[in-house]
Image (cartoon, rainbow, N blue to C red):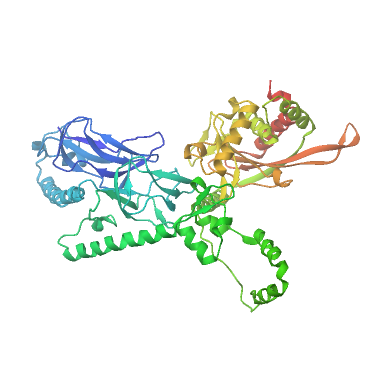
Length: 560
């Protein structure tokens, strides 16, 4: 009896999957345990094996196509078995003889015709040359819709082993290494360095050396008779190595002061040459100090400008003409501008914050905290060897404990329901070179102050070094943003949805305060709670801040 095979849920966060490769074609015999296909999830490309034996009668999702979990992936049954009733949702238990009504006979004929049209399409992947794998742009985070290739670590013609790093891909959250799950020769690169492409588009093609893949470069079926196409492909194959050799020639290793080496991506090398930037003075942010495109774009030579002046001092007469020859800006009525391409992180920050600002009816509540006791308690804690706790760690701990007492703040708005999170996971906003990342402390209320401090330092370090994994930025129920270290005394943040609130933390300021009827010098800190009014009423937000104030002003209560 025919059986429908659905798109499996291969990870806990997977909602849809992409068929990267079919390893069986329509008409093939399937044994239990055979690998049917390679399916790309939100986390990795995984092999999907058959749990049933029979003949592959139907393929519902073609290579490169994406479909939701539980949608029809394939049908397995006896050879020649009629499976169309299953696809119509009529079930496969009823015999075909019970469905011989005249109107339905016409529908059956139409279905047969449609199936005949679809079968060649289903068999199309079989025409892919043996051993050739199309590698698509991976989905490296839950919010990623497209990616930018920051650096290719392999070039066309290179041998690729399973586990080799193919490229560095810039997502909406970080720049991440993308490793190969297949072995072979890199035959084609579909997205060049610095270019952006949607998830699931053709990133590269890997296969046996010398294989003609020109017909598959755009994800299409192979061309039929094409002697001319083959000639073109040969021309391209000859031109490609020359182009790649040119790129290789432009890649250089720059010696640093400590005797190390700095690697330069071809695109960065070209931009540096166009701008006249000395690569020896640029600090690389890529893997192993590799200089990439953004390092050149963000480089400002102002700090290095005084050095030539000293060298020129002994020869003042010679310096004068050089000074006169330097270009002088003269206003001409035209406004000088420069366009800098938005990276994926900036695009997603813009989109998500705009969605939050224009969909959530937000309001803000501000309160001033007496920090004298917090300062004294922190000094005592940090006097313990190998212990380091910041004021921000104390705020995070206080927020976690206050959220336990005010569960309405630890919620998420949906159109039909309000989700009450039983766990407390606080996101801590971290400023990085290209934007803002929010690593998450899972189950924060169960962590001690020292555990919070160590975790925040670890995650912040990963964020700045672009080593944060997507899982370390997911699942927050509340967010803390602190600009106190920049001297900002008070500010208001935009809610990090799907959270219902975010706390903005200002600097500790020393000023005159009234205590016991006397004016004395005190230390205060202003915090602002921004709330989504759909889930948090004003009184609820005010009560949360009162509880937070009690914990901060009496730190010993956080240790009880």
